[in-house]
Length: 308
Image (cartoon, rainbow, N blue to C red; front, top):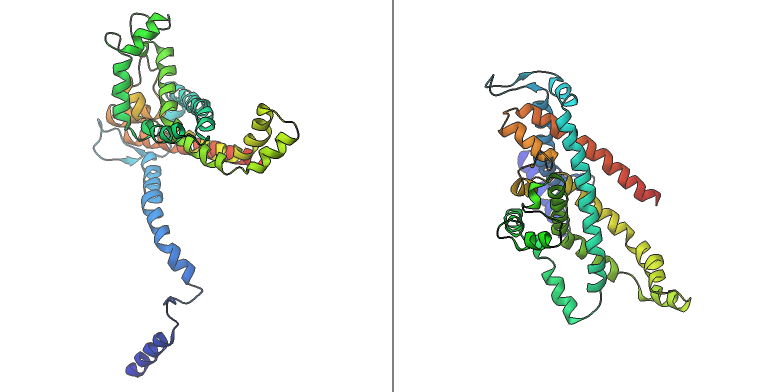
């Protein structure tokens, strides 16, 4: 009997057309997306579930070596932590400021590079340098440029009256504004490349029709270019905003959250909670709150895009 079933299976496999899957048709989609779902579950869902479980523990490593159930104790402490909420406020300002600088720098650069010239093609390659340079190299490089003793940019800022005798990184307001600019400058190439792709997809006929109707350069930009690239701006701006919200490397390398906590973002606050205060459960609660706030903000941004 077994030999007969085996022969039937072999006969069916031999009669199957070449290239046809071994799975039945109704199971084929699940078999194709199954590995991707498994990988996504392993690298995203499992750590998220662990972070949520950890946020419900009472684990202060100076008092106890292992976590114990604490319920909402970390979330109650989080609501009363005024310094942490100040960090959240700075992080929102940092995120909006970084995206604003990226848009401000990327738009004119993309419009210039959209012209088919030899200089534009060469500059298109060079424009990627800030994006591909690691944060640690950029951070130490900018610290040298802004150094009050040997930094050429500090000498220029001192000459025009913006900086005093000490570096701008020692002033709370100037340090925060400076690091926002550097963060936006680093992310600009990514937005430039995305805008270039969107600009090149605009048909020339639209500009020709607008020109026939008497539209000037500004009118063509506002009524043809902007509507054609707005979806790209919103989508890429949302991605860059999420990346900026989770920033840690650049402010930590340049100021370590100072001076006077002026550049302490939520990422730095979470790092200090784990490695300086030895409260990993509290840091996990911060990460969950970060995720919820960012998810809500992303939903609002996507909804606004649909309305437009």
